[in-house]
Image 1 (tube, rainbow over the protein chains, first blue to last red):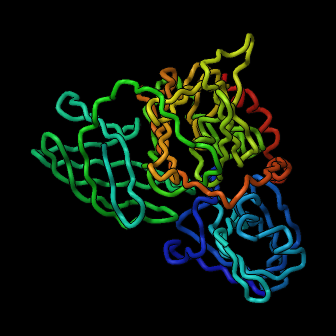
Image 2 (cartoon, chains in turn purple, orange; image 1 turned 90 degrees about the vertical axis):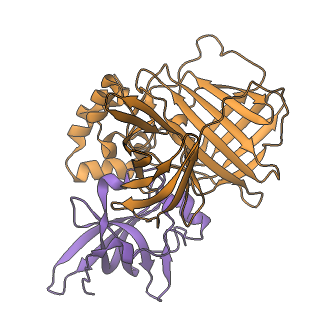
Image 3 (cartoon, rainbow over the protein chains, first blue to last red; image 1 turned 45 degrees about the vertical axis):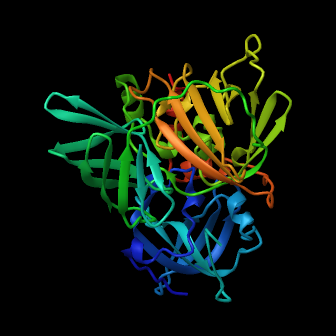
Length: 126
Length: 315
């Protein structure tokens, strides 16, 4: 696994997203609209409960160090409507996650899309 | 009444203008806006937020006559879902009509939120007391629903992501909101609250039919927040909603006004739209605050959180 972290203009990278998924939380308080990143890693823990789903991801930097990323998605109630259930992603899965960076913690990501090991790409509007 | 037309559904809002010394004071949907008038040219800068909470400005420029305005608008600032800008028009708001004889329509069913309509005006015209309280608000720590506590009907009625079901029965409408699995009763027979009925997140709602519009007046609200920005709602606040079902019965529109002079110099207004969706049901919504407290723990902010407990009592 390698770390692939790219800061880009958010407007060029948003796809599959359904903004209304964020309708009720303090997203803007924690995340930036301007900066996004893409990480590749292994799922180590899943929290698939309201108010927001969380996936913890171990990301290796290629030099032997591993960083634990806290990635957050929409409410599971909204995700399951689209077919994204608690069984969609399992502990141990390799994933590539693209999302908005946290404001104060660079190991914090708000999920825009997740690419599964088989190449399937899912997003908040999935 | 303002109407913006870009690529998406129209956005509607109430613009009020008042002369103030050598300048103008303006509000959109009850929130202050910057207004510049030069001859018959007008520019209005409206701060707004997108569905993710990011704040941006809509800059409206145009011309006006006695009865109408028109022009174009652009978007400024970072937003998750940028609008392309477009054209805008405004016409004088019709005078409120007298109350009509009841003509109830079928409002029962499951309704899914539809995009557009609302300006999502960001800042409101707060009283000094409300501003003091608001200045100390930390949205990530103080927002009720992040720890699975109800944010109250004033905030929930305007959330755009979740469907709601309305069950019509004799002299009563029952609203079931998917978010939070909240239930609300609207009494259509003029019922008064029972003795000692306490203020609560959902309050006590009476409704009546004004022609084919449903008007709901809610009182006995628990002190809470207006939305996740954290502007306060006082215990003495009332909320007035006017629901209109389209002629074909498939679209439900609402104008929602918060009447809370303790906190707002001008009443905030919101607009929402839903479409009838018989193909879905209200999904269960269980909420577990564990992840919220865990984050506090991991960030060593639990002490700070509990030291701020009094803030969450709205004293």
